[in-house]
Length: 154
Image (cartoon, rainbow, N blue to C red):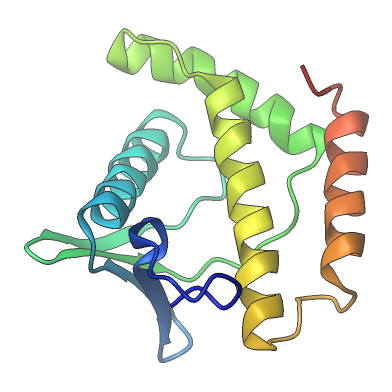
């Protein structure tokens, strides 16, 4: 149940769990969340193949019935202008390997959704945010990082 509305929302019927401090398992129990988790596994594998120097989690296992994504835990940092530049360079390799363009706006939108979603579930569950602070501070810091990278709202 959604804590504010009291209704089930299948978009968020997914979860993740740390396994032994070395792996992360992601799973879903609704069709819409399962598609998102499956897409994440496909994007991670394609990006790692196209740009192995990017610090992305290694995909250890995937499944389709039920949908499951297991990755190696990678210490994370917020996306910075340098990270965006690295993604831009990775796009060149991705295009050479796949014949398709890497949609940087979509990648940044995914990052934005992930950061905001993380702040939301943590605040609703009463789980501390990494590095401390509160959700409004996280949103402000995200806006500053995107602004520093030259990304502005349309």
